Length: 455
Image 1 (tube, rainbow, N blue to C red):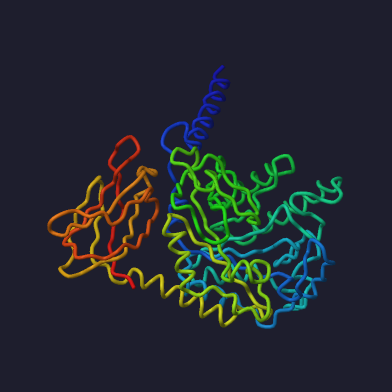
Image 2 (tube, rainbow, N blue to C red; image 1 turned 180 degrees about the vertical axis):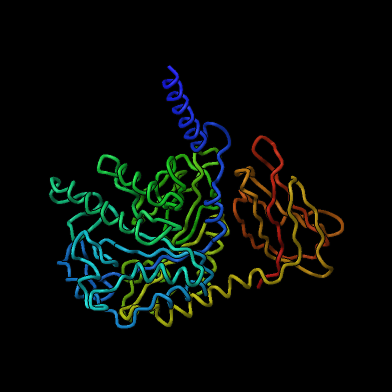
């Protein structure tokens, strides 16, 4: 009887823990790892595949052999130095994209760097990438698609011979075990198109992830079981203007088709804490090869101007999401010179936003008043809610006082991790932040409210 009671107590404890994570047992709160991820704000996702060396469509064309992969000057240190120049705090390497070619010497099959001329088949780009991240203090992440593999004849979770699915699942599990076991703790794991469906082995992969990388943030994972982040519905880093941190369900899109709706914009009362990650290639998605993710010769003209990337910073980080920028590696194995200049200038523009702070307040209240130096005319507001208590704030406003009356300068919905708003400068002697509507009418905690003079 005692043993039975202990067993029942254990089941009740597990149920309570699951209810808390799903939001049915109280407030829906971020974990410390999700808060640390949000503080990074900018990351890069790095692509290099066989199409870098020979353009082809892996869904239609015969696949080239692994000997096609032949960089002459591959340097992962240069990749990560460029990422740092852009302000990136984390980097995700696409270790295996749709072709199935693997950037590490996998034991699952021969379609990998181990059978290429690079370093006489003795190289491991994943290992080099991880080492460079550690060297430069950038948090490492890995992407390995589960539902697409041209080498094994798999596309969109479908294999030409369904009888071979069990064999294919074994390959996936072998490769993910290698990636999640051999390179240390990972900051983020990327499921492009989501994990495999549960009926096709997705639950087994979830179990493997929870076992091998329990501390990783998971893009498009299962928010009921792990610390997840979600796609925001497009690959242009344009998050919805109101983009909540909570959601009713995770996302599982492959990014091919833009979409909208509450799953991508989130929900104030969602069951899970699952913030948005807004990805964008560093080249124009309409005019560049393969949407700008994979390098192609003579395409420098398709690079987004740094000022355009700054605009997307406002529509991603400035709307409470992280911004994940594509980094295309060329056929030498380097970030091209034009791209280095682009990333570097973008980082300079972001840092310049925050150089001329003229006022700042923080604390727990619904109303804050604060002066600015005489004659100073700020034009940029940066506000952050303290999310350790969850997302409490539904809307807020900034007013300016001209000596006679208050004037509305900004009126927005959720504040989230960070809200950036440019506004028309004026001759105001003081400002007022109003937190209009909060969950259960409690006072929110403002982590930071700062005004800047920005060009």
